[in-house]
Length: 391
Image (cartoon, rainbow, N blue to C red; front, side):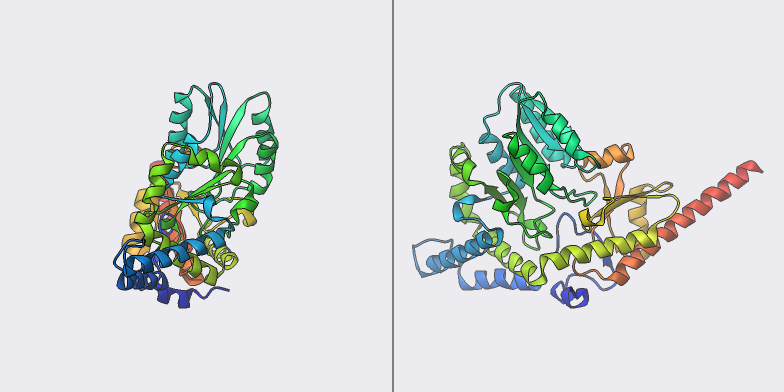
């Protein structure tokens, strides 16, 4: 079981008088990871290579870090390509797919808008079709089977965990159906790789991508997994040679990611997920009431610690400001590039809360209570205004 009070010692930048509930897109960097980065810079001042003692030592550290990353995800060396970003990873994937006119590209409705826009442009360029399937709703299996009937479906992109609702996609049920129909599968693991232990070959996907900045590591490193069956196709793409040549340029990113994975493994992925779930549940239980709507999975086992909400009478940006200015609670407001949220709210922005390993149950209760306090205040004001109008 996690001890958030002890873990907080690894995050000295977390101010005592603030409650941080905005950890979804980029987490802090714990001291053990920073120490590994500092040790690398203190020990070597060269890029990995064979030119001199320093560069050779850098190569040893780099290769050791790569090995730890491969071991963590259960892959062989050639299965992982280190890129500069999720965008570069996705572009390599698309270059490796021989997508033709009138073929269909499926995408889960919880995908982020940036990814969806890129895929839409790509599909339109080759005069194919992009179809969105909602895998978060009940009965998604029948929706998926219906999407495959009578069509030439070439590929499907699945967002493993929604960055807005925190819902875990049931890829163990979706991927076998797609694979049976010969559909290539792409997993966006941006919000899952830091809270779910992924043995990538066992997922059955053809491709997976995520980034280091979400994983208690530094920004600037993308991770692209390619199955053995698709490896030759990726290696034949126009962009592959450039990406491979640039891999060692970001050796510090690889070293930092290996250190972050070591830190996450020490905490325990199951404990991380359960702790975040419990924090989110504490917030919901304390804040629930008339005038508040939460967006997360109905099933607890499909939730993470990311959740979004709206208050009927309060714009989400104002709610964020009130929480920060009056109660020192840091949250985020917006649509988070999420079509599924915009669809659920009718275009309205939400307040997103994303507690993590250094947040305590007491903090979660406080956050929920303060939201309830704001909610009740605005409900009371609305009733008073209505009463004045009637008199």
